[in-house]
Image (cartoon, rainbow over all chains, first blue to last red; front, side):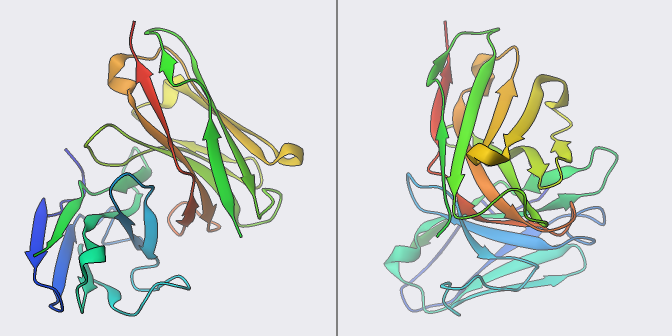
Length: 111
Length: 123
């Protein structure tokens, strides 16, 4: 069971918008930067968002990140079939056993 | 362009030591603010962070596997080696190495990943 909680799945139609939540605590999401990764089937994760809301070069502005208190959100607008993937959030946890933690992943289906 | 590639055995017997090598290009691990991490993913499951080595040879480990892991770097060869002792079938997973940017534990991210190597632990 992951320290960071994500919905197992979300779905939306092409062209629509979807949001994926990542809920944590004051020792992780509420205190440290959050990243988001996209994992297409059979491939390695790809960085979409870092430092809560920054996009690496090459990532379209359809992808956005935000954070409030102990919850982070990934937003994807103008959904495309190629966006079908599993999305993971990740951040550092500063509890007694400090380490990097990931959410359980959210499967996005573009209907 | 930054690339990373994992290498090592794809089948390991229980209780053996697993040694994985990450060979990378496009950056030097002698540069301040850079690091290489290892992350694994059991089939159909979530990502699990294992370890990180910084440019200055500082190291971090998952508290759940700390006693079984070692990580080292060879800057001249552009390689990072992860060793995991006493493997168990539950260690069956795809193991990824990844390029990390960030000066501190809490402010870092992984912008480039290797393709991963599937390691099966079975007798």
